Length: 193
Image (cartoon, rainbow, N blue to C red; front, side, top):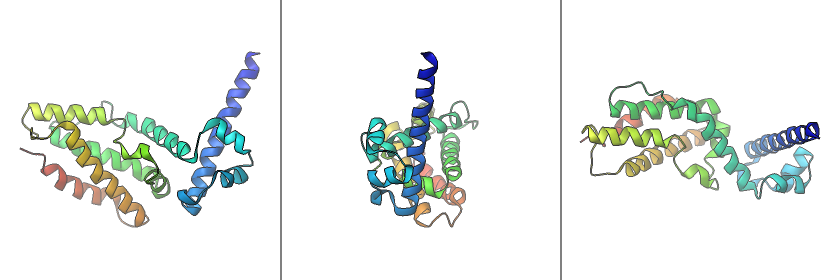
């Protein structure tokens, strides 16, 4: 009995992975908004019922992909900020964030930045690390206190998502790291007291 359950779980994982891969490939080729559930089924060779067994909608596939990206990003931020000052830690955090997205590549970032992906409009999971950095910086007078940590994080991620979107629209034809570093330095400067 237990062996059957393991086979089922394995098959379920394989089916979900197939749905992810197929959806991402179709989105790359046609744009996420032009992909239908039927397209995914046809390309993956599975039934509509199989998709709806795992995901309630096409957007749910994208939402779950975003959660997976956040989970993979988490180790980049936990106990990894080595800079001394809060301002430098924010810059380091953003650099790690952009390095991770560079590794994902233009296609995956384009899919994640899709306006239908409501999960991607929120700052990523490791925001708690950034929140702590900002609050400590405010306590030590390195960061202005007339804005909350949440407000500062919102500014930072509006900028970060804007840079990622622009990079995708230009099909990765410029250095994401160089450009993001220039923009980050300018934005972070406004948070100094």
